[in-house]
Image 1 (spheres, rainbow, N blue to C red):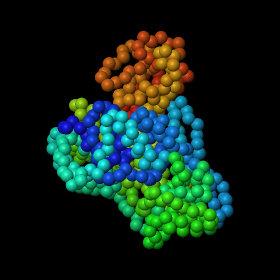
Image 2: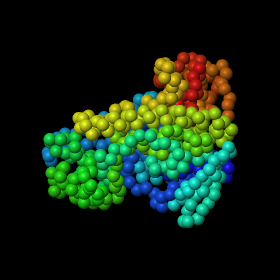
Image 3: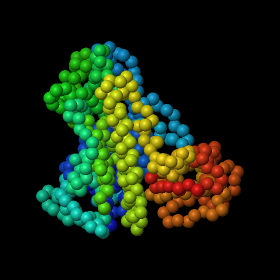
Image 4: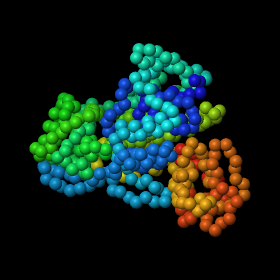
Length: 475
Protein backbone atom coordinates (compact mmCIF):
# COMPACT_ATOMS: atom_id res chain seq x y z
CA UNK A 1 0.00 0.00 0.00
CA UNK A 2 1.83 3.08 -1.27
CA UNK A 3 0.35 5.62 1.15
CA UNK A 4 1.13 3.73 4.32
CA UNK A 5 3.79 4.41 6.94
CA UNK A 6 5.95 1.48 8.01
CA UNK A 7 7.11 1.70 11.64
CA UNK A 8 9.99 -0.53 12.71
CA UNK A 9 9.89 -1.02 16.46
CA UNK A 10 6.94 -1.51 18.82
CA UNK A 11 8.23 0.23 21.94
CA UNK A 12 6.59 3.37 23.37
CA UNK A 13 7.90 5.53 20.50
CA UNK A 14 6.69 3.30 17.68
CA UNK A 15 3.36 2.68 19.36
CA UNK A 16 2.74 6.39 19.97
CA UNK A 17 3.53 7.20 16.35
CA UNK A 18 1.33 4.41 15.04
CA UNK A 19 -1.54 5.49 17.29
CA UNK A 20 -1.26 9.12 16.20
CA UNK A 21 -1.27 8.08 12.53
CA UNK A 22 -4.09 5.57 12.92
CA UNK A 23 -6.42 8.12 14.48
CA UNK A 24 -5.75 10.30 11.42
CA UNK A 25 -6.86 7.44 9.17
CA UNK A 26 -3.32 6.97 7.86
CA UNK A 27 -2.61 3.28 7.04
CA UNK A 28 0.26 2.14 9.26
CA UNK A 29 2.09 -1.12 9.92
CA UNK A 30 4.09 -1.71 13.09
CA UNK A 31 6.66 -4.49 13.02
CA UNK A 32 9.05 -5.75 15.66
CA UNK A 33 11.68 -8.46 15.38
CA UNK A 34 10.98 -9.65 18.94
CA UNK A 35 8.83 -12.75 19.22
CA UNK A 36 7.25 -11.64 22.52
CA UNK A 37 6.22 -8.30 23.94
CA UNK A 38 8.72 -6.70 26.31
CA UNK A 39 8.08 -7.58 29.97
CA UNK A 40 9.84 -5.24 32.38
CA UNK A 41 9.70 -1.86 34.05
CA UNK A 42 12.65 -0.14 32.32
CA UNK A 43 11.29 3.37 31.59
CA UNK A 44 8.87 3.57 34.52
CA UNK A 45 8.80 7.35 34.97
CA UNK A 46 6.17 9.21 32.93
CA UNK A 47 6.78 12.95 32.85
CA UNK A 48 4.01 15.60 32.99
CA UNK A 49 4.31 16.58 29.33
CA UNK A 50 3.91 12.93 28.33
CA UNK A 51 0.76 12.75 30.45
CA UNK A 52 -0.58 15.61 28.33
CA UNK A 53 0.21 13.64 25.17
CA UNK A 54 -1.57 10.63 26.64
CA UNK A 55 -4.57 12.85 27.38
CA UNK A 56 -4.76 13.76 23.70
CA UNK A 57 -4.31 10.16 22.55
CA UNK A 58 -7.08 8.86 24.80
CA UNK A 59 -4.99 6.70 27.13
CA UNK A 60 -4.50 8.99 30.12
CA UNK A 61 -7.24 7.48 32.30
CA UNK A 62 -5.86 3.98 31.79
CA UNK A 63 -2.31 5.15 32.60
CA UNK A 64 -3.39 6.98 35.76
CA UNK A 65 -5.49 4.02 36.91
CA UNK A 66 -2.64 1.55 36.40
CA UNK A 67 0.14 3.71 37.85
CA UNK A 68 1.10 5.40 41.12
CA UNK A 69 2.58 8.74 42.17
CA UNK A 70 6.31 9.02 42.80
CA UNK A 71 6.81 7.01 46.02
CA UNK A 72 8.39 8.19 49.23
CA UNK A 73 11.88 6.69 49.55
CA UNK A 74 12.98 5.40 52.97
CA UNK A 75 16.74 5.67 53.44
CA UNK A 76 18.68 3.22 55.62
CA UNK A 77 22.37 3.67 56.41
CA UNK A 78 24.15 0.68 57.95
CA UNK A 79 20.70 -0.80 58.49
CA UNK A 80 19.49 2.19 60.53
CA UNK A 81 16.57 4.32 59.38
CA UNK A 82 17.94 7.70 58.26
CA UNK A 83 14.84 9.51 56.98
CA UNK A 84 12.42 9.85 54.09
CA UNK A 85 12.56 11.84 50.90
CA UNK A 86 11.02 12.01 47.45
CA UNK A 87 12.72 12.49 44.12
CA UNK A 88 9.92 14.93 43.39
CA UNK A 89 7.82 16.86 45.91
CA UNK A 90 4.20 16.83 44.66
CA UNK A 91 2.75 20.15 43.58
CA UNK A 92 -0.87 21.15 43.07
CA UNK A 93 -2.38 21.37 39.58
CA UNK A 94 -2.99 24.83 38.15
CA UNK A 95 -5.44 25.98 35.46
CA UNK A 96 -2.60 26.04 32.92
CA UNK A 97 -0.96 22.82 34.13
CA UNK A 98 -3.41 20.02 34.97
CA UNK A 99 -0.82 17.22 35.39
CA UNK A 100 2.15 18.75 37.20
CA UNK A 101 3.63 15.61 38.74
CA UNK A 102 5.44 12.60 37.27
CA UNK A 103 3.68 9.23 37.30
CA UNK A 104 5.12 5.77 37.82
CA UNK A 105 4.15 2.84 35.59
CA UNK A 106 6.33 0.01 34.31
CA UNK A 107 7.17 0.45 30.63
CA UNK A 108 5.67 -2.89 29.61
CA UNK A 109 2.32 -1.86 31.10
CA UNK A 110 2.47 1.50 29.33
CA UNK A 111 3.13 -0.33 26.07
CA UNK A 112 0.19 -2.67 26.69
CA UNK A 113 -2.14 0.31 27.17
CA UNK A 114 -0.89 1.89 23.94
CA UNK A 115 -1.32 -1.41 22.08
CA UNK A 116 -4.89 -1.76 23.34
CA UNK A 117 -5.71 1.75 22.17
CA UNK A 118 -4.04 1.11 18.81
CA UNK A 119 -6.12 -2.04 18.38
CA UNK A 120 -9.26 0.09 18.64
CA UNK A 121 -8.21 1.53 15.28
CA UNK A 122 -7.70 -1.93 13.81
CA UNK A 123 -3.89 -1.93 13.98
CA UNK A 124 -1.94 -4.69 15.70
CA UNK A 125 1.79 -5.12 16.23
CA UNK A 126 3.39 -7.74 13.99
CA UNK A 127 5.81 -9.64 16.24
CA UNK A 128 8.62 -11.82 14.92
CA UNK A 129 8.86 -9.59 11.87
CA UNK A 130 12.28 -8.17 11.07
CA UNK A 131 13.24 -5.42 8.68
CA UNK A 132 15.88 -7.14 6.55
CA UNK A 133 16.67 -4.32 4.13
CA UNK A 134 15.15 -1.36 2.37
CA UNK A 135 15.71 1.07 -0.46
CA UNK A 136 14.06 4.39 -1.19
CA UNK A 137 13.30 6.51 -4.22
CA UNK A 138 11.49 9.74 -4.93
CA UNK A 139 8.04 8.33 -4.23
CA UNK A 140 8.48 5.80 -1.46
CA UNK A 141 10.37 3.07 0.37
CA UNK A 142 10.62 -0.58 -0.64
CA UNK A 143 11.32 -2.83 2.33
CA UNK A 144 12.01 -6.53 2.71
CA UNK A 145 10.49 -8.07 5.82
CA UNK A 146 11.20 -11.54 7.15
CA UNK A 147 8.93 -13.66 9.33
CA UNK A 148 9.48 -17.34 10.09
CA UNK A 149 12.00 -17.51 7.27
CA UNK A 150 9.56 -16.09 4.73
CA UNK A 151 10.33 -12.85 2.94
CA UNK A 152 7.76 -10.18 2.13
CA UNK A 153 8.35 -7.10 0.00
CA UNK A 154 6.31 -4.06 1.03
CA UNK A 155 6.00 -0.60 -0.39
CA UNK A 156 5.42 2.39 1.90
CA UNK A 157 5.40 6.13 1.52
CA UNK A 158 7.63 6.55 4.59
CA UNK A 159 9.67 4.38 6.94
CA UNK A 160 10.28 5.30 10.59
CA UNK A 161 13.03 3.60 12.56
CA UNK A 162 11.87 3.39 16.16
CA UNK A 163 13.93 0.24 16.59
CA UNK A 164 16.12 1.14 19.56
CA UNK A 165 19.73 1.99 20.23
CA UNK A 166 21.01 -0.76 17.92
CA UNK A 167 18.69 0.49 15.18
CA UNK A 168 18.82 -1.48 11.92
CA UNK A 169 17.34 1.52 10.15
CA UNK A 170 20.01 3.93 11.39
CA UNK A 171 22.85 1.52 10.63
CA UNK A 172 21.49 0.79 7.15
CA UNK A 173 21.50 4.51 6.41
CA UNK A 174 25.05 4.88 7.69
CA UNK A 175 24.05 7.64 10.08
CA UNK A 176 26.70 8.26 12.74
CA UNK A 177 25.62 7.73 16.36
CA UNK A 178 27.76 10.35 18.01
CA UNK A 179 28.68 10.14 21.69
CA UNK A 180 30.36 7.73 24.08
CA UNK A 181 29.93 4.58 26.12
CA UNK A 182 31.64 4.33 29.52
CA UNK A 183 32.58 0.70 30.02
CA UNK A 184 34.01 1.38 33.48
CA UNK A 185 30.61 1.97 35.08
CA UNK A 186 27.95 -0.73 35.03
CA UNK A 187 24.56 -0.66 36.70
CA UNK A 188 22.26 -3.57 37.38
CA UNK A 189 18.56 -2.98 36.82
CA UNK A 190 15.85 -5.54 37.41
CA UNK A 191 12.32 -6.29 38.61
CA UNK A 192 12.06 -8.46 41.73
CA UNK A 193 9.77 -9.22 44.65
CA UNK A 194 10.81 -8.48 48.23
CA UNK A 195 7.84 -9.35 50.40
CA UNK A 196 9.58 -8.34 53.64
CA UNK A 197 9.44 -4.70 52.48
CA UNK A 198 6.34 -2.50 52.65
CA UNK A 199 5.36 -2.07 49.01
CA UNK A 200 3.93 1.39 49.67
CA UNK A 201 7.45 2.81 49.90
CA UNK A 202 10.74 2.84 48.05
CA UNK A 203 14.03 2.05 49.74
CA UNK A 204 17.62 3.25 49.66
CA UNK A 205 20.15 1.00 51.38
CA UNK A 206 23.75 2.19 51.80
CA UNK A 207 26.65 2.40 54.19
CA UNK A 208 26.92 5.35 56.56
CA UNK A 209 30.45 6.13 55.34
CA UNK A 210 29.29 6.39 51.70
CA UNK A 211 25.58 7.21 51.80
CA UNK A 212 25.27 7.84 48.06
CA UNK A 213 26.76 4.47 47.14
CA UNK A 214 24.01 1.94 47.58
CA UNK A 215 21.01 0.27 46.06
CA UNK A 216 17.55 1.60 45.29
CA UNK A 217 14.34 -0.40 45.31
CA UNK A 218 11.30 1.41 43.93
CA UNK A 219 7.78 -0.09 44.13
CA UNK A 220 6.11 -0.92 40.84
CA UNK A 221 2.33 -0.65 40.55
CA UNK A 222 0.08 -3.58 39.77
CA UNK A 223 1.74 -6.23 41.92
CA UNK A 224 4.41 -6.80 44.52
CA UNK A 225 7.55 -6.10 42.53
CA UNK A 226 10.21 -3.46 42.99
CA UNK A 227 12.54 -2.05 40.39
CA UNK A 228 16.05 -2.76 41.65
CA UNK A 229 19.02 -0.51 40.77
CA UNK A 230 22.58 -1.05 41.96
CA UNK A 231 26.16 -0.58 40.79
CA UNK A 232 27.44 -3.84 39.31
CA UNK A 233 30.77 -4.61 40.91
CA UNK A 234 33.58 -6.31 39.03
CA UNK A 235 32.58 -9.05 36.61
CA UNK A 236 29.41 -10.01 38.48
CA UNK A 237 26.60 -11.45 36.39
CA UNK A 238 23.04 -10.10 36.44
CA UNK A 239 21.47 -12.92 38.45
CA UNK A 240 19.03 -13.17 41.34
CA UNK A 241 21.86 -14.44 43.53
CA UNK A 242 23.91 -11.32 42.85
CA UNK A 243 20.93 -9.10 43.61
CA UNK A 244 20.38 -10.98 46.86
CA UNK A 245 24.04 -10.54 47.78
CA UNK A 246 23.76 -6.77 47.28
CA UNK A 247 20.59 -6.53 49.38
CA UNK A 248 22.18 -8.52 52.20
CA UNK A 249 25.32 -6.39 52.08
CA UNK A 250 23.78 -2.93 51.86
CA UNK A 251 20.64 -3.40 53.98
CA UNK A 252 22.30 -5.08 56.91
CA UNK A 253 19.24 -7.32 57.16
CA UNK A 254 18.77 -11.05 56.78
CA UNK A 255 14.98 -11.17 56.38
CA UNK A 256 14.75 -9.68 52.86
CA UNK A 257 14.44 -12.56 50.41
CA UNK A 258 14.27 -11.64 46.74
CA UNK A 259 12.12 -13.72 44.40
CA UNK A 260 10.54 -13.57 40.95
CA UNK A 261 13.28 -11.89 38.92
CA UNK A 262 11.22 -11.21 35.79
CA UNK A 263 13.46 -8.70 34.04
CA UNK A 264 17.11 -7.80 34.41
CA UNK A 265 19.66 -5.85 32.40
CA UNK A 266 23.14 -4.42 32.72
CA UNK A 267 23.28 -0.74 31.84
CA UNK A 268 26.37 1.24 30.89
CA UNK A 269 26.49 5.03 30.49
CA UNK A 270 25.71 5.24 26.80
CA UNK A 271 25.04 8.82 25.73
CA UNK A 272 24.58 9.16 21.99
CA UNK A 273 22.83 11.35 19.43
CA UNK A 274 22.25 10.52 15.77
CA UNK A 275 23.99 12.84 13.34
CA UNK A 276 20.66 13.39 11.63
CA UNK A 277 17.08 12.25 12.16
CA UNK A 278 16.01 12.10 8.52
CA UNK A 279 17.27 10.63 5.28
CA UNK A 280 14.79 11.32 2.50
CA UNK A 281 11.68 9.30 3.25
CA UNK A 282 13.19 7.57 6.27
CA UNK A 283 13.09 8.97 9.80
CA UNK A 284 14.61 8.04 13.16
CA UNK A 285 12.80 8.41 16.47
CA UNK A 286 13.29 7.40 20.10
CA UNK A 287 16.36 5.39 21.07
CA UNK A 288 17.24 4.93 17.41
CA UNK A 289 17.96 8.67 17.38
CA UNK A 290 19.19 9.28 20.94
CA UNK A 291 20.06 7.13 23.96
CA UNK A 292 20.09 8.47 27.51
CA UNK A 293 21.26 7.52 30.97
CA UNK A 294 18.29 6.35 33.07
CA UNK A 295 18.84 9.30 35.40
CA UNK A 296 16.01 11.76 35.15
CA UNK A 297 13.58 9.46 33.35
CA UNK A 298 14.06 11.18 29.99
CA UNK A 299 14.63 8.48 27.36
CA UNK A 300 11.16 7.00 26.92
CA UNK A 301 9.51 10.40 27.33
CA UNK A 302 11.70 12.03 24.70
CA UNK A 303 10.92 9.21 22.26
CA UNK A 304 7.18 9.63 22.83
CA UNK A 305 7.57 13.35 22.15
CA UNK A 306 9.47 12.54 18.92
CA UNK A 307 6.55 10.44 17.75
CA UNK A 308 4.00 13.07 18.72
CA UNK A 309 5.94 15.69 16.77
CA UNK A 310 6.34 13.51 13.69
CA UNK A 311 2.87 11.98 13.37
CA UNK A 312 0.90 15.03 12.26
CA UNK A 313 3.70 16.10 9.93
CA UNK A 314 3.71 12.73 8.15
CA UNK A 315 -0.07 12.94 7.87
CA UNK A 316 0.20 16.40 6.32
CA UNK A 317 2.79 15.11 3.85
CA UNK A 318 0.54 12.22 2.85
CA UNK A 319 -2.18 14.76 2.19
CA UNK A 320 0.09 16.75 -0.11
CA UNK A 321 1.96 19.18 2.16
CA UNK A 322 5.55 18.01 2.67
CA UNK A 323 6.76 21.41 3.90
CA UNK A 324 6.61 20.42 7.57
CA UNK A 325 8.81 17.32 7.39
CA UNK A 326 12.12 19.17 7.58
CA UNK A 327 11.06 20.73 10.87
CA UNK A 328 10.99 17.33 12.56
CA UNK A 329 14.77 17.06 12.66
CA UNK A 330 15.43 20.72 13.41
CA UNK A 331 12.97 20.69 16.32
CA UNK A 332 13.55 17.27 17.84
CA UNK A 333 17.31 16.95 17.45
CA UNK A 334 17.78 20.24 19.29
CA UNK A 335 15.51 19.00 22.08
CA UNK A 336 17.25 15.62 22.27
CA UNK A 337 20.65 17.30 22.60
CA UNK A 338 19.39 19.43 25.46
CA UNK A 339 17.69 16.53 27.24
CA UNK A 340 20.84 14.42 26.93
CA UNK A 341 22.61 17.21 28.76
CA UNK A 342 20.07 17.09 31.59
CA UNK A 343 20.35 13.30 31.92
CA UNK A 344 24.14 13.39 31.83
CA UNK A 345 24.35 16.10 34.48
CA UNK A 346 22.16 14.02 36.80
CA UNK A 347 24.32 10.97 36.15
CA UNK A 348 27.44 12.96 37.03
CA UNK A 349 25.84 13.98 40.32
CA UNK A 350 25.06 10.34 41.08
CA UNK A 351 28.59 9.18 40.26
CA UNK A 352 30.10 12.02 42.32
CA UNK A 353 27.89 11.19 45.29
CA UNK A 354 26.21 14.60 45.50
CA UNK A 355 23.62 14.81 48.27
CA UNK A 356 20.94 16.05 45.88
CA UNK A 357 21.70 13.41 43.24
CA UNK A 358 18.32 11.74 43.74
CA UNK A 359 16.26 14.93 43.55
CA UNK A 360 14.46 15.97 40.37
CA UNK A 361 13.37 19.43 39.31
CA UNK A 362 11.31 21.10 36.58
CA UNK A 363 14.06 20.51 34.01
CA UNK A 364 13.02 16.83 33.84
CA UNK A 365 9.28 17.44 33.31
CA UNK A 366 9.62 18.37 29.61
CA UNK A 367 7.00 21.08 30.07
CA UNK A 368 9.47 23.83 29.24
CA UNK A 369 10.47 22.30 25.92
CA UNK A 370 9.89 24.87 23.20
CA UNK A 371 10.56 25.27 19.51
CA UNK A 372 10.50 29.07 19.72
CA UNK A 373 12.91 31.47 18.04
CA UNK A 374 15.61 31.94 20.67
CA UNK A 375 15.68 35.65 19.89
CA UNK A 376 11.99 36.09 20.72
CA UNK A 377 11.63 36.87 24.42
CA UNK A 378 7.91 37.50 24.62
CA UNK A 379 6.00 35.43 27.21
CA UNK A 380 4.17 33.04 24.86
CA UNK A 381 5.11 32.76 21.20
CA UNK A 382 5.11 30.31 18.30
CA UNK A 383 6.84 27.08 19.36
CA UNK A 384 5.81 27.21 23.03
CA UNK A 385 3.64 24.64 24.76
CA UNK A 386 -0.04 25.58 24.68
CA UNK A 387 -1.38 25.95 28.27
CA UNK A 388 -4.66 24.55 29.51
CA UNK A 389 -7.45 26.65 31.08
CA UNK A 390 -10.95 26.02 32.49
CA UNK A 391 -13.86 27.31 30.40
CA UNK A 392 -17.59 26.90 29.88
CA UNK A 393 -19.11 25.90 26.57
CA UNK A 394 -22.06 27.60 24.88
CA UNK A 395 -24.48 25.57 27.02
CA UNK A 396 -22.73 26.56 30.23
CA UNK A 397 -21.04 23.19 30.83
CA UNK A 398 -17.50 23.05 32.24
CA UNK A 399 -14.85 22.36 29.60
CA UNK A 400 -11.10 22.81 29.21
CA UNK A 401 -8.88 24.09 26.47
CA UNK A 402 -7.31 20.63 26.37
CA UNK A 403 -10.78 19.27 25.54
CA UNK A 404 -10.86 21.59 22.53
CA UNK A 405 -7.37 20.57 21.44
CA UNK A 406 -7.96 16.80 21.82
CA UNK A 407 -7.99 15.04 18.47
CA UNK A 408 -6.01 15.03 15.24
CA UNK A 409 -6.79 18.64 14.31
CA UNK A 410 -5.20 22.04 14.68
CA UNK A 411 -7.11 24.61 16.74
CA UNK A 412 -7.52 28.36 16.32
CA UNK A 413 -8.44 30.49 19.33
CA UNK A 414 -9.88 33.93 18.54
CA UNK A 415 -9.88 36.01 21.72
CA UNK A 416 -12.71 38.51 22.07
CA UNK A 417 -15.48 39.13 19.61
CA UNK A 418 -14.12 37.95 16.28
CA UNK A 419 -14.99 39.98 13.21
CA UNK A 420 -13.93 37.20 10.89
CA UNK A 421 -13.65 33.56 11.91
CA UNK A 422 -11.35 31.56 9.62
CA UNK A 423 -12.74 28.51 7.84
CA UNK A 424 -10.06 25.93 7.13
CA UNK A 425 -10.24 22.19 6.62
CA UNK A 426 -8.90 20.17 9.54
CA UNK A 427 -8.94 23.17 11.89
CA UNK A 428 -11.33 23.67 14.80
CA UNK A 429 -12.03 27.35 15.51
CA UNK A 430 -13.32 28.77 18.79
CA UNK A 431 -13.99 32.32 19.88
CA UNK A 432 -12.88 32.84 23.48
CA UNK A 433 -14.94 35.49 25.27
CA UNK A 434 -15.15 36.86 28.77
CA UNK A 435 -18.36 36.37 30.80
CA UNK A 436 -21.15 38.64 29.67
CA UNK A 437 -19.74 39.11 26.17
CA UNK A 438 -22.07 38.37 23.29
CA UNK A 439 -20.81 36.14 20.50
CA UNK A 440 -22.69 34.68 17.55
CA UNK A 441 -19.97 32.24 16.45
CA UNK A 442 -19.05 28.97 18.18
CA UNK A 443 -17.50 30.19 21.38
CA UNK A 444 -16.29 29.29 24.84
CA UNK A 445 -16.44 31.44 27.95
CA UNK A 446 -13.26 32.22 29.88
CA UNK A 447 -15.10 32.15 33.19
CA UNK A 448 -12.18 33.17 35.41
CA UNK A 449 -9.88 34.82 32.89
CA UNK A 450 -7.30 32.03 32.94
CA UNK A 451 -7.23 31.58 29.15
CA UNK A 452 -6.66 35.28 28.46
CA UNK A 453 -3.92 35.34 31.11
CA UNK A 454 -2.17 32.10 30.07
CA UNK A 455 -2.03 33.20 26.43
CA UNK A 456 -1.15 36.83 27.20
CA UNK A 457 -4.13 37.64 24.97
CA UNK A 458 -6.02 40.83 24.30
CA UNK A 459 -9.29 41.21 22.39
CA UNK A 460 -8.38 40.55 18.77
CA UNK A 461 -5.52 38.13 19.55
CA UNK A 462 -5.65 35.07 17.31
CA UNK A 463 -3.60 31.96 18.15
CA UNK A 464 -3.18 28.77 16.17
CA UNK A 465 -2.41 25.61 18.15
CA UNK A 466 -0.60 22.85 16.28
CA UNK A 467 -1.98 19.30 16.46
CA UNK A 468 0.85 18.45 18.89
CA UNK A 469 -0.15 21.11 21.40
CA UNK A 470 2.37 23.83 20.58
CA UNK A 471 1.68 27.32 19.33
CA UNK A 472 1.97 27.49 15.57
CA UNK A 473 1.20 31.17 15.07
CA UNK A 474 -0.11 34.16 16.94
CA UNK A 475 -1.41 37.43 15.55
